[in-house]
Image 1 (cartoon, rainbow, N blue to C red):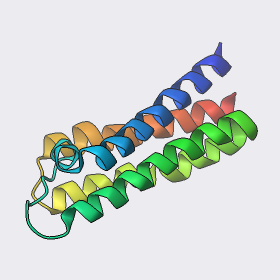
Image 2: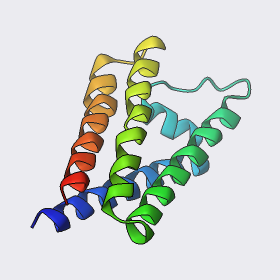
Image 3: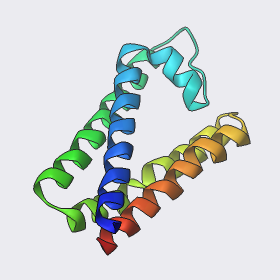
Length: 124
């Protein structure tokens, strides 16, 4: 029972981050608002939002590839290290005027869920 749960949660999280990345590539300003720090309409913010989108999409694909081709232990180490991203996002949102609800309710909660996923994969 543990193995399907571990793989299932990891797959859902990887697909979610892939979706988030795609949204930042297709609708960067709307995605930034959902992230918790809206982008200003002027300047080159769109380029940086697309960079974030590419980063997230690649992390999602990498997680799926590790699950498919390297197994639970490699995927667990990946999840453990990639949890730094939503932890960093928490700080970025707080530092740039986003709400605590978004910082902790979305980003910090995501980091915690990714760490749970890592623990389940280590145990599988």
